Structure formats: structure tokens, C-alpha cells
Length: 256
Image 1 (cartoon, rainbow, N blue to C red):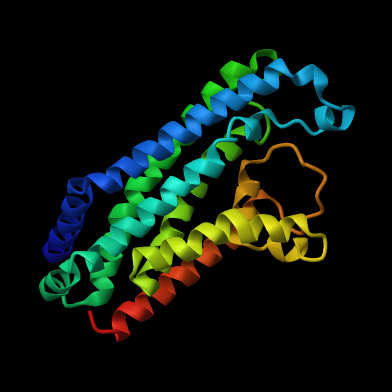
Image 2: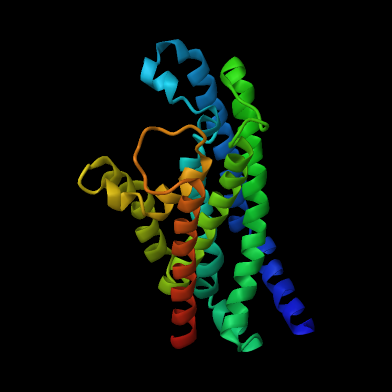
């Protein structure tokens, strides 16, 4: 127990003393909340121009999370940097010399980083919601409405899972350039392209971001998805577990 505590403390020291990783979390909060607030204000001022269908499917909760698209980029950056810094600085050799049990070492890093991004993700989600609803005014909603509290808590969980997924992928690839080179197109190009094309949209529904983001929706947008908000989050969690498992196998069987 004492050994586990010392390993956790060591990982916490690494995370809080690397400024670049903490900056990414701050950027995630500011970008998500700030952009969501601005878009909510824009929607309020142009609400009269929306078509009847757009008004019918208008989701004030999801609108306040409009900044999540860019905010998740910062969460991905955090997940990549906290793992790749071990390899880019050569610290991985010292870390494994201090903690030869590779599974324990990885579990400690994932635990500490997940706890940190969970706190930041929840603060970001609730802040984005309240700021967005303040901008929407009479078009907004409240936490007491059906499905809203679930969506806001889900926003924090979504940001957390995005960062942990990036950590798992980086454990496998080791290189920050490779990790960014795969994750960025995956989330900001491939996913969008597959979703936009009718023939591949059903495949896109099962990608982690497309499935996980369902948890932030309260009003259905008319798309025929074979799962609900919690089902989508379950699919995303399965992706995260697979990435962590792949990362563990890579860490266990490759030389540092």
C-alpha cells in the first residue's frame, strides 16, 4: 500500500511540474466554455432566422457545449503529452527502474491523470452549461429539466474519456508526433467525413467521438442511431479500454 501511494505521488509530481500539460487543461476549459458562450449568444440573436425544423430540434443544452469540438483537442493534447514526455525525455528508463512492475507504473499514471482530467472536465462542463444558458436567456433550459443533468455530467465524462483514449493510443505509439498525426485526423477529419457520407454514416456512429458525444444531447436531432446517450458512452468506453489494453501490451513487451 505504501509502495502504491509513493508511485501515485511520483506521478502526481510529474504531472503538476510539467507546465505544458497543465496549460492544455486550462486551454480546454477556456476554449470550451468561452466558445460555447459565444455560440449560444449568436444562436439567441439569430433564433428568429431558424427554420421550423431547426426550432423543433433546437437543443439548448447541446448548444452550450458547442465549444467542445475544440476543447477536446486540448484534452487529446494532454493525454498525448503526459505519456509521450516519458519517452521524449528518456524518463521512461528511470521510471521503470524505480517501478519495475510496468502494469503498476501505467496504472498509477492513468489513475492520476484520469482523476485530474475528470475534475477539469466536470468543471468545464458545468461552467459551459451555465454560461451558455445565461447567453441563451429565454431560449435556455435548466438542470432540473429531464435529461439535462445527465447531459452536463456526461459532458465531463466525455472530456475525461477523450483524454484517457489519447493516453492509451500514445502508450502504443510512444511518439507525440505519431500520436498527434493519428488522433487529430481521426477526430477532426475521418470521423466527420464518414458521418457526412450516407454510405459510411453507420460506421461513423460507432467511432468514439460520435458515439460518446450522444451523452450531451437532450433533444433528438432526428438521426436514427441504434443506441441512446448511455449506450453511446458505453461504446466510447469500450474504445478507451481497448486503447489502454493495447498500450499496456506495448509497454509490457517492448524495451523502454
